[in-house]
Image (cartoon, rainbow, N blue to C red; front, side, top):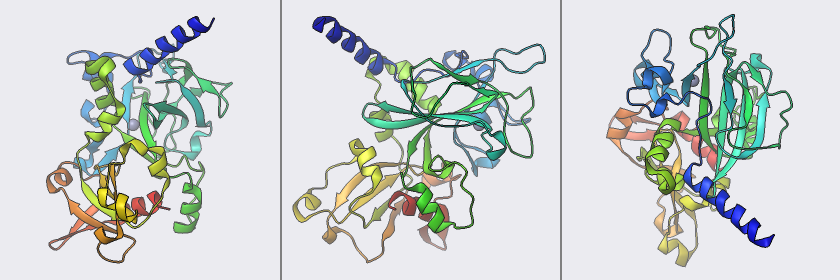
Length: 333
Ligand SMILES: [Zn+2]
């Protein structure tokens, strides 16, 4: 019995290494040459590119945090019927069946551990959430969690034509989001606790799925994150914050801090604010007295991907804009 257990564990490890993420519906046109039209749903009257991830809307100034996947099946009334499935093994973190509370409509969030990193997948605009889903419940990769749909609370509804799955992969900023929000924005409503969009930093599912498709068993989520392009560098005077534990593999060595003691961290942020490199810094390495400061900006990356408005140029000086300050405050709260 002992031997067969080892054998099973071995197989599971292989599967986990080979394909950590699966496509969440039967639409696999992402992997076909020129299949984009059949895979992505653009915004009204706009090309498929507006259904991809990133600064793809409003001339680059509006960020789309996920990918919009076209439906394949419809019932007699033309409503979508595609099954929506877990992208990886995980547990149910949160779901909402009150579409009026969110522009996501009905949605599900699953928690996954991929290569030691905590990742949250999100499935939005669902027609239905699977009826017996419970918070904390385990789900296997490929297990159905709902039905593709077009629910949302935005003034402009999603037409039958544009019914799609909005799919996200996220990293979580801070477990104490609700407390931070109460303190920082006392008049803002929070209907979804820590599962607020501000507390989830999205990564590009298309880039991940394509890279994984190409690299097979060599794919590493950590490698993908470490390959992000830097938008800016910030130093924070804080010895501990939850990101350091949740994404410990992103921390690089800081020799002086190791000798003199850690006074804070230098962070490299990508254009969506993901701290993808963290270097411990000693007090002697941190200038100034402020809680955090902007060290540098990669201007070409800013011009390519400005949509999150994390930094701004005042005259000749770059500074953290309010979105950037909020992100750093929440990260280190
Ligand atoms: Zn979307």
